[in-house]
Image (cartoon, rainbow, N blue to C red; front, side, top):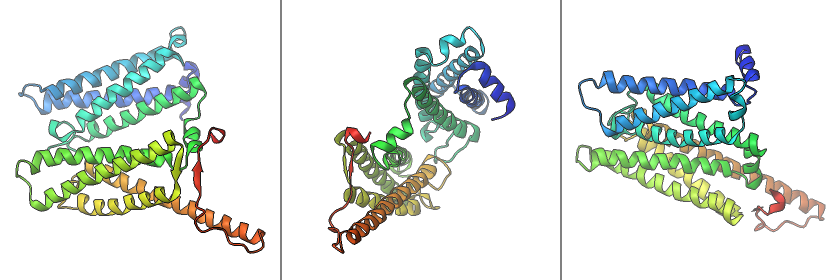
Amino acid sequence: MTEVAQQMANRSGSPRFVQWVAFLLFSTITLGSTVNMVNHVKEGSARTASERWALTMSSFTFILTLVTVIMHLHPILNTYINGTKIEGGICLALVGFWIITVAIITDSKYDLAVNETGAVSNGNLYYFSWAGFVCSVSIFIQYLQHVFQLDVAGEIQSRAARLNYWSGLLTTSLVVMGSSLNVHGNFCRTGEASETYCARTTYGIALGTVATLVGAFIVASKIALRTAPFVVEAGLGTLMMIMYVFGVIFITEQQGPGAPLGNLYYFTWLSFLVSCLITASCFEDYQASKAAGANNASENGGVDADPQDIDVENLDDDHI
């Protein structure tokens, strides 16, 4: 953090002020890129509903963020925004607005930041819209931490190992599924693409769907049912990693639908990396369990531990 940013943060009295300034920067660039795309790149053509939505959502986010930053800097208005329900409402609204903005801007069928083939055609609009979305979620989480004295990352970790990884895989797989469906609708249903291309697109749809269902099952097991059998989790994690190995090969190579740099390319690779982290974490836990079993056996006079005695996560309230 620079000295100027630190001074401004101290003046505002908010631990989130620097994030709000960064969010304002992302919102400004996104709004400017949207206006440029609609008014200049597509000059002469009537605005579509998606373009009007993109302009409206990016304008709302810019205005809300600008007002919030100004209120943080004003000594009197600061008391109405810093850590209050007003800031929480703004954070929640911005997350909602940004979800809509990213969904429209990065959808290939609207031809804004991504062209019809799924490739990024406007770098500023694409990358800064995603940056704004991530920043909005980050600010909202920090607000919850500040107001309710929650350690969100700590709570997730204490509830169950790898819950954050499985939540990430669920999210990235949803994007893989949605992007593959868009590509299939744009090219395969119209007969414009080859059989190989469409077969790989279909695999992307199936991969995203299966991974989403698996991720939802594991997350629900860890949160709602408070049980997550280690063998089941390790098996599904390994299966996801293997499926995403083929996904990276089939989807992102030259003849695949994810070859152009866009949502399908980035989120297929992200999903593969997250599935590798899940598998590696399960393997580490297995190795730790074996070491603990060997130690117990030696302490018990050479009596081996039961090989079926695999750790099952205990998520009772006293562990939370």
